[in-house]
Amino acid sequence: MINYQNVRNENINIEIKLLLEAIYLKYGHDFRNYSPAHLKRRILHRLMLSDIKSISEMQYKVLHDPEFMREILTDFSINVTEMFRDPLFYKTMRREVLPVLKTYPYIKIWHAGCSTGEEVYSMAILLEEEGLLDKSLIYATDYNETVLKVAKKAEYTNENLKAYQKNYEKSGGRRKLADYYTEKNAMIKFDPRFRKRIVFSEHNLVTDKAFAEVHMIICRNVLIYFNRELQNRVIKLFHDSLMKGGVLGVGSKESVDFSRYGKAFEYINKNQKIYIKKYSHDE
Amino acid sequence: MMPDYEIVVVGASAGGMHALKEILSNLDRDFAFPVVVVQHLAPDSENYLVQYLDEYSSLSVKEASEKQRILPYHVYLAPPNYHLLIEEDKTFSLTVSEKVNFSRPSIDVLFETAVLAYQNRIIGLLLTGASQDGAKGMQMLHATKGLTIVQDPDNAFVPVMPKAAIELVPVDYKLTLEEIAPFLNTLSRARTRRKKQKR
Ligand SMILES: C[S@@+](CC[C@H](N)C(=O)[O-])C[C@H]1O[C@@H](n2cnc3c(N)ncnc32)[C@H](O)[C@@H]1O
Image 1 (cartoon, chains in turn blue, brown):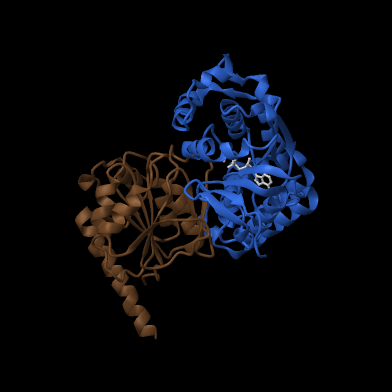
Image 2 (spheres, each protein chain N blue to C red):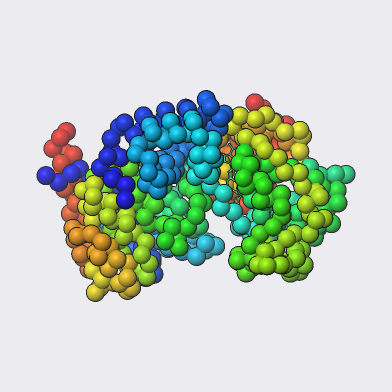
């Protein structure tokens, strides 16, 4: 167990600051504006699991050992995701959002912080069922190359299938999830026709630039890890990447209301945190 | 000397709804500490529990939201399917990281981050449940000299959870459900008196 008496020590917070600075300077990954409690918990747990004695020693190791940096990156980034997470979000997409997108000749969608891709394939299935897949292109990004590798393969273990099938039904799915994948050796693989409409690439929301004009941005359960300043930055990025009348969907406990750019958006569905970028607004 | 407590953190699982109602409906109207609660819930449950408890309590019962400032006279419940963390600047964070003790939200996660933010100025309360969640959290609380209270397993709807904590640490108090709110009120009044004296 971590000795929590020592954790009270103010030095710990200084050491964490220095560690994050070192990671940024060396690798360009910027965690300096992430919510501290989450990072601290992760750092202390990593400390506990390894034979490293202090956070300062951790800093030394990070600087000299890129492999260790990859481990830290995995610690920091929470990649937990699932298919049709929050089924009502997808139901609302089906009923209220896709009918609007239908009117465009083609549809560009950006999934930011897509993790291992379950959410992206869920969206692709939705698009197919609404007859929109063939004219859609999904850009799915994350800053963690490890999760993108998984996403690109379109292969997952079958252990969560029951829950996914249930989510799918609750989201208004009329078929069986099994219609969309093949199962082999306890793994499922999604049909290549979905993969063809998706471009996976590395993109860091903190340090990288806006995307080309897209019709919809989905970024769920990523903003909660950022402090207000960083949230503001990222919401501006979304604002700049969306066409007027474009759609923004965030996580069920996230919102853009507080932000300087909040006024540029209005709700399509408040419960599901789905916004539309207004056609005009006063800065 | 008794430390100046600043917050009450509560963990509850099976049977928690009734236990929380009993406690929250008997806390003083001017209860001096914010109360932060993790109650294990099904991941897709609408947060109906918030409304239910709000009706019975004279304190304001809310779902905790990210970046929200933690204030006295309020009871905050962790939203289903998110871990609830306390920041050192006394605000909330949420995460969807892996389940801990098969639970999200997890009591241990709340207690652990509460210790980082409030050190020994915490009152930790572990109620009825069929889980092991919260025992490690109580251990940390105890190690930093926070106050540890469990519902007496003999009196709990499901004794597993308080029992797990008792096996891990010598908790400060074992109380029946009926004793908990009056005891917390005593601590709250003591704090209010001390504050007045300081002024
Ligand atoms: C909890 S997952 C959310 C996955 C999915 N959107 C969902 O809601 O199920 C958060 C993801 O955000 C990614 N992430 C965190 N910081 C990021 C950043 N600065 N730029 C891009 N992605 C980031 C992480 O790598 C992780 O995959």
